[in-house]
Length: 304
Image (tube, rainbow, N blue to C red):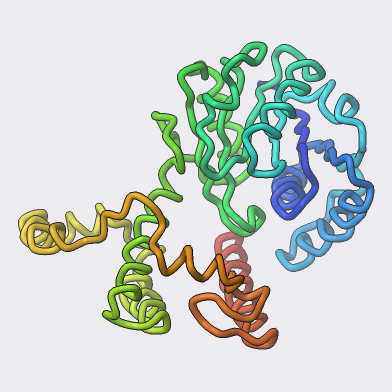
């Protein structure tokens, strides 16, 4: 790894330009590629705003290059992070191009949320340099990155990627087995499966689920992980509780009928006014602002 690596980013959407800001804030040169001129223009508008809300010096005018040419973006890069659509076929096509245009030493990372990295890397040129780098949304406000090692990825690629992310102020974790959903999304969606099941079974409504999480165990999740909590209360107590609960937890192998029915009827959430709950534009915006305010304050507190 060079002292001042060049970062290429493929995709200028919410994830792409948020990831770009992370590296720009660390003083690294970033080449941002998108085939859509409008997406690049939007990214150039949004990145200075991120610097502003985080009270950071805006380095984008000196360090950011935006281009509609993938070859230009990655031909001199040391790392490339792909932040394209969450479709395996599209990602495989992108990586085929990256393997052509990027230097042989360049590490190629995909920001997929759930697709196994090996499925993207298999059959590519030098698949050993392809790795998962799952950033969380919004990436400029959430520090965690899941660094996912496939059956092809070398240990040096993992080590160098973890080192780079740590140096720019991120929190990388090593996912040693390449499984769908990695760690975070498997934990998140395991809880979501049980939440939907409880509503489906008439145990409570959606509002109650959210109140229990936000005002109950959710309050400590930012400072106390589930296995820390198990050790804290004692594994003997944990075993007793789980022995009672496990036989009754939902174990559906496919999404519940309630969710499938809502999607089929077009009740897909905030953007259409109804999902598990009913939304107005005002109430939806209140939630967005509440989340953003909390995440911004968390970052400001960390930086101070």
